[in-house]
Amino acid sequence: MTIQAAYNQAMAGQRTFSMDTASLRRHLHGSGIMPTRQRMEIAGVLLVRPQHLSADQILETLQKAGSAVSKATVYNTLNLFAKNGLVRPTKVEGERTLYDSNTENHAHFYNLDSGAITDIDAVLVHDLPPLPVGTEIAEIDLVIRIRNRRET
Ligand SMILES: [Zn+2]
Image (tube, rainbow, N blue to C red; front, side):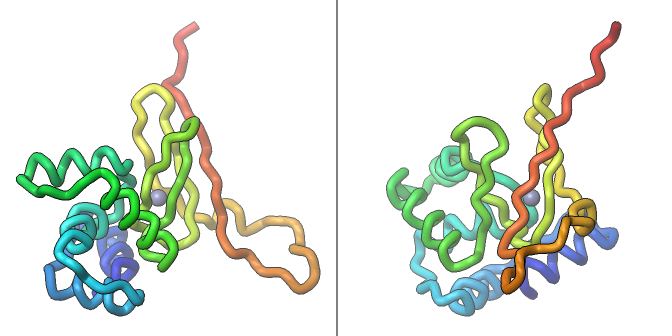
């Protein structure tokens, strides 16, 4: 099952899904990435469900699980995953990059108070003005920053 198929299934009702090791390995191979042990470890944290994680969060999760993976390897691998279309780097606040395992065009709610990030359908931005002749949308990067309602 591809990430997207799994994601669609998750969105269709089942809120969680998991991708087994064999599927992950095929997914990396299919994206032109040699599934080394450390890449598989990182994929096993990030790519198993639709989510948004920073490199530090991935590193921390792996270290807690006893992995010897280095910070440099995590960054290099995330860059490789991004280059090969497995993840989408997203900046929701300042310079902090989050890696999004959902690579379909979609937008985000980002709650400034809680830090919660929610995927929303890109249908919101389907009413764009016409694109310049000869161009197509490569990526939609839209973050709608929200906050908890202030009492007056
Ligand atoms: Zn997202």
